[in-house]
Image (cartoon, rainbow, N blue to C red):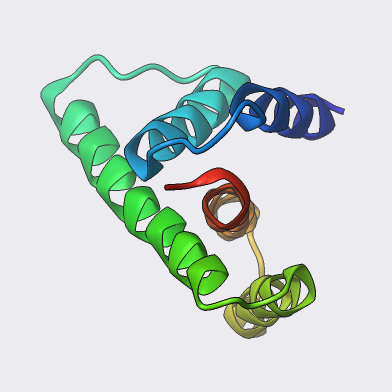
Length: 115
């Protein structure tokens, strides 16, 4: 249920128009941190947070690029499904499951709302 609510909040917050991928990445990562009940307080956690923002900005930019190349929503969704199934071949644990979910969110928000 938390994931559904998070997806709705993210969708509504970006529905007004184009949004930068940096803003999208921060929103996605912050939502996951909030839902998980984690915090970013140590130097190592802040460095990890910054790395996550950079990576999810790139993932979002890939979504934007795909949209600008006139790929359909169907094509974008197939890409997300394919990426998730490939990474699941080695087995799925909680961390991999969450990583796939937030990567899919960053990509799809970039495709739909990114600039």
